[in-house]
Length: 330
Image: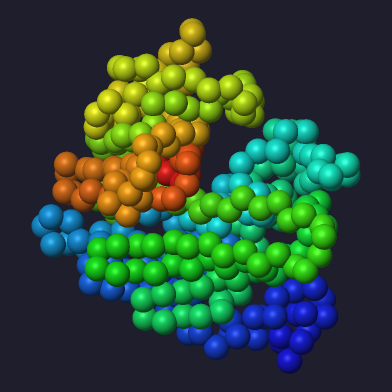
């Protein structure tokens, strides 16, 4: 009955299936494999916890999130913590675009109402996603978005599948456009903030001691003062605050610097991934993050051609478990 009501109102055909999957005592859906355990909420399909053992054998939670799933619903701050970003990740300047001779006005939720940011005011990170499948080591979130949602044309059914294997987490996206001549622009991502020393009361409150390496990212996309991409490329000069490609580099010294007389706090930058063919995407990581304190090292593999680096710089001691973390998305 829930599925029928949802489809009539323009929702997902998987609405009734979602209720079949059990949650833990915190209202989260858990998947696990040897050496790794992840908890999700269906609000934005957010990753709420990721537990892994440090070198002392202690299980630590290394992603930023809330302790209870219900807390995601009314948090007034960054609503994309750990969640899916869509229908279109990034910034659309002017909150609109032209396609096939038609102008589409998209949700003006960014930069004082002048841009569309990460999908719009009702982007996927702010939507309760349905769950099509949930096994011990895998979960698939789905969203069925009608044409016109946040101003985007075309109707699409999309899926986001998380699978864990021994010390490994895989994310895959799927999109099924509707049978129509109307184009379906889409650009999906997932946002997670990391602290490899663990989100614990006695843990470090910063990632300043972490080491980051982006071996294929000698270039980044230029952005204006508002953070909107200009379309130009900039070189990441050796020993500059953007030089993570010439070798692993400790993040701390570059988190707060002066550039052209202006103070710059943290990162919010898109780095290109310039790899020779063949990519060997399953054996050559495009990013690695490591902590000497916990002994944990994370490597990221992708078939995409850019990654976005964002640091969490805003203190919030009310309900978040930490106030400084690092986001890397492709």
